[in-house]
Length: 472
Image (tube, rainbow, N blue to C red):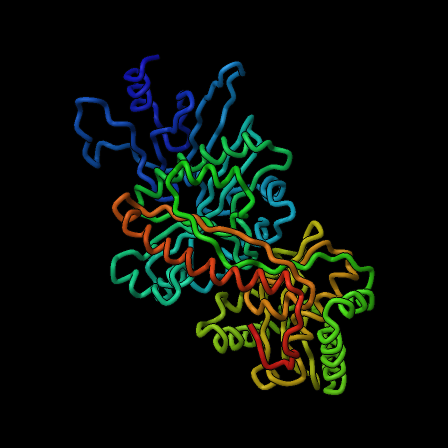
């Protein structure tokens, strides 16, 4: 079929529920509307674009695109790209096959984020299937113009965020591919795929989503892309994305059989840190503080939320990003993968921590400390590190992800650094040209910061004692 005939066929037969396109090794030139897109066809040569009323209506919540691609010397294969507006539109078991080892990308966690976020950030999913089997996916959060609209700008540009906004270089509104609290990439692939397969699937997903973002006038941002992922770097470079390093994430690889063995290992590397940990544990015992697991957080959800909210406001200057409903829904969505630990003194909860784990990997996305006890009793260190590491060892976990910042404390407790990049594609070429020098300045500043952090991690030198006064 000729190009003109193909376009005529699409114009006549396109429906949003499913649009089948036969375009060898080329991006489909349609988009759907179930998540806000207008269904539209490629403009024919010599014809003006039709009026809004002439365009096809959209009625379905999921937009499908198929492309039949034939490679030289290989049989044709079918890729189906789908756009969905909620994680609830994906079968949990199918999604979690891709999210193995990424608990903060699991179906239950993403659904919890959708249901309990303080500021609603709609989820946008890009799904790639071959032979009706889900092979890859990307999940985005849509950042609109809200009271906290500059959050991503400050993450990118720090003190230069206001200048960037004045120059019209804010990335909002935008689609941001990121794990909430996990600090890992939001691009998922089925295990066992080759580098070529990953590049191919990623390119097809971006073909569709970049068209969607263009129609919505949104910047696209990816965070948490590992620096050693050559396939992903090649895809982003070929599509004109701007790249800049991120602050590293601290990971603790569990290789001890007991907490006592961990302390003995630490004594050889950082003897002062090992003494501090024993001192912290003693202070908690003398103060009558116990750390307990809470099987039913619903019963005390109001207090738990208040602890987390006070902690966020004191340290970050903004409220806890989830509604009180979060602690009521946590166990319902995550089951035994979520562990809620509380620090209790005289029968009252004075601290809370949420740890989620699956497939041998865990992360601590939430901690809240009572203000009165924040600077004494070593509460932060006992709840945030000591009891968490002890529990991870007892449960036989392979790795704990302890987030960013407070690098001296985390490195001295055995963490290594995981390096990643972010990638940005502004909404148009003009804005991309203006943002390029800002990204270069950011990259220069980040390299200076990273050099200091990496030198500290590799030197193994001792730092001042922990006294419970410093917190993330």
